[in-house]
Image (cartoon, rainbow, N blue to C red):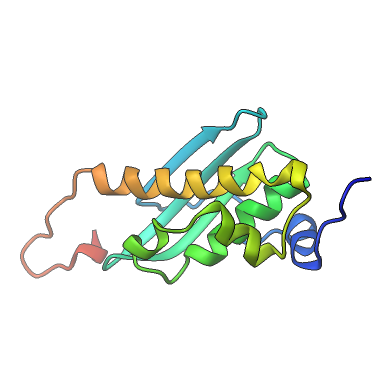
Length: 136
């Protein structure tokens, strides 16, 4: 018998938060997991903190719930804190997932980390005299 999804997971499957690409982003990643689901993250960063995050997935309901929760957990965190988010953190925040779907939380955590790594390896444009980096 399959374990039902928690209220938090079901809510994010039906009404995912932060779904869809960002128009302006600083970090991006796309990963296809071993199950065949693909997840994509976009991050907007300011002063070392994730100020906006979004995702899309080609996967199942638990994949959508996990992507949604991972973006919610990331927003407002310093990059170093967000990079430490793990599968267990996403699962805990969701109130768990059925055992056969727990890999979706791993895919979400790994895609978030890859988007952070993408941001960290991108060249930065130095601000011109009188501008802040956010103005660019």
